[in-house]
Image (cartoon, rainbow, N blue to C red; front, side, top):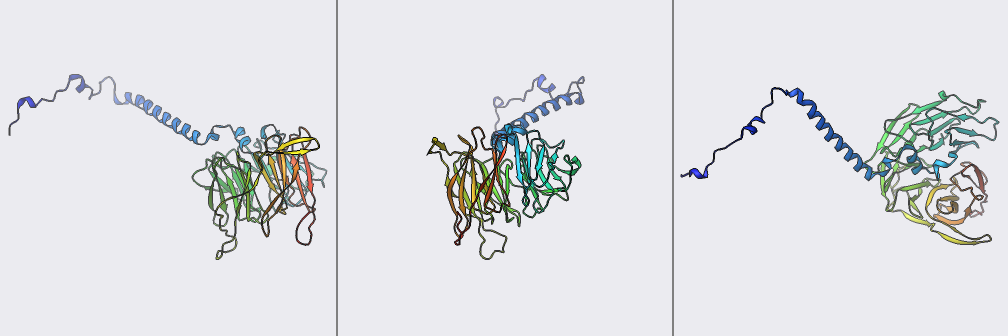
Length: 418
């Protein structure tokens, strides 16, 4: 073997490079530690800021303030400037609760001369109120930072119940609360927050909750429990919503094409879900039927959603001239008997379209008319009376007031109504 000297070079290292391997005696290891920590913490902070901005680009609602978030996902049209922030009929009596702009809640009962006013230091930015079924006194309130459950004795003559009458329910990261729903039996309460990907199922008596969490969606914005107790609709800020079945608490995931699920309501028997999508002018329907061989109470999910109504802009000739109605849908309300469907349209001008409905033997949805208030009294929120005996009674809340509209009809021999 021959190795020419020219092909071999001694490894050379400059004096400065060899010195770099050693620490100067004047700068110890502990003296360099703060500089290393500063650099590493700066890199960590930059990484966290990048992750936060990336997450915010996926879910833009996370950059909103609490009040802006409530306004964005509230079922009330133009929630920030509406004097009436929320409204709820009691499911069994004629009393109702009204949440006002000053964060107070008033309870009205035509059979009582007393009007209790509910106030609490945590009762801020009320997004929704709902009475507990099969109970005379419990009222759930969705607030900015927590849930409140008031217990107001209907026989009490007090006009200002103590804040001690309210249970405070909260969970880390679960605020603001934008939607709540009681189970038909009143045993459970579910709550939703756009900041929390989990839907909370509360045992109010025990004051504890179980989070139901799934990947995707960016939060939960709107909840609706079916009248038969078998399903819960859970909307998200993104292009999907979920339908939970309450026997095993599993869910079906439904994607949307153009926008998020804006609103939804159930048929009286819980077999049919009507829902709308933000940015669209149509109403979709999902039908849940019992599958052969599966015990009662479990349902076989639908294969696809069907379009049952299109509310695109249409011009009508009236005695007062042409009127254009239609457009994007803000909210839906179905009367408990399944005879009338009210649709709040948010475009020019805001108006309520009313449909005549039938759920059996086949589903029918027929235009019935419009509800339009006085000039300047634009509808913001609506709800059917849950126990009206002479047809359907619709409560419409405008900017400063609430009015009742009754739809009277009678049954004939073949089951039709007129």
